[in-house]
Length: 335
Image (cartoon, rainbow, N blue to C red; front, side):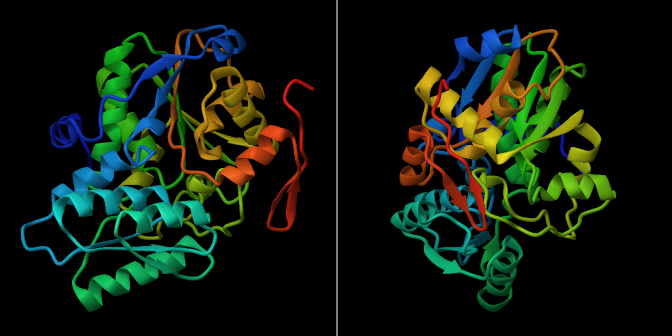
């Protein structure tokens, strides 16, 4: 099953007035770094604080009348989007997450009235519980990335970026399960086949990158990361986001935890934006010189703001950050 621009246009009609029209603004500092206009799509301004509302809302609104409820596995933001959409539609929502999900994200989902299930230490454990609920209780499962309505909803971001700036040369898209990257790439390349779409992800536990290298979906060990929203597998039976990313992404770039830390500081101190580590990977790759010099304007997506503020304060203060058995050494901005 493929995905077309028509699917993304249909999704735009569904989410209109609820999960669309976020700002797309230039970053003067990053523009100076890359030598071209560098623009930020502020999905952290969504009602749930993350882009995931687009796909989740499109999928939940697409369920048939009389549905018993919805479930999903999530690293946090997709669950929040599903919970938000389910509440608007009056449906029960059960969100399954691993123990790696930050407490701030769990609390945000619970505040929307959803039931929480913490299952194991990885996304695959959460997925297994979500699938059990489908079989045992008749809930509808909303995949965070391998669902055509979810991917189409995320693709509306690409539409908005290209409509605002038809001259965009490169899109830097945070890459996890591939729903965002696939949707944005479908929209962008339908409008401008020459545009470059580059997926950016963290060095450790990057499931889509490992799968593309292997030529098929594979499992990876999940580890704590500043970019926790990019964690989790892509599903061994992946049927949509893997082939779309394989066929449409021009490149994938990996960034280190230190590079993510630096980019979070730049976004805060230079643009005054609070954002998750997953949001800044496009900035991180640019700041680290891991991308070729662009021949035109660059756009990236600031995907969410639902982070642990205590950890954020430590990063901004230049303190050391412990991620499991790894320590990211502190660095004061500007030193």
